[in-house]
Image (cartoon, one colour):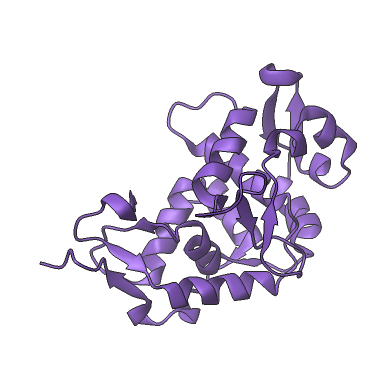
Length: 213
């Protein structure tokens, strides 16, 4: 996956496909802290990663939830709004996921464990986290993986041998520690997600304009 602004002969999702993905996500119950949970899963998958810190959660928000031209006081958007549509988020990610906030919040604290305090705090998922996240973050309805990938990767391009949505889902699964080839990761994916690639038309992945050979 590459930044679409720097891509050469890559495929990108059309604006219409991203809008459709957002609409599908908005109509699901997805708890706001599902974003932080995804950030932790992603950081744990990172090569050489030993511990997850607040900086990893903030970096996920900056990379995938920051909106172009958004005001400084609310730079992020998320479709994880419990059925209330796409909403802007304030920039205080650190406050939302501070150790004291995680420990005091009955929902996220049942999925995520935090050790320590301040900048030295480390984050991890609890035992049986996927089943608990399905219940508390998703109300026992699996999240649409392709739509989520389309939203997260809306500003990125893909070098693909076949420009089809299942290939994008494979990239998502690899980045977030949900790989088909790893039994433990596959179990997490199967618990939390359904592959809704069929919701996307083959024409919704197009070669980046102006870079066609």
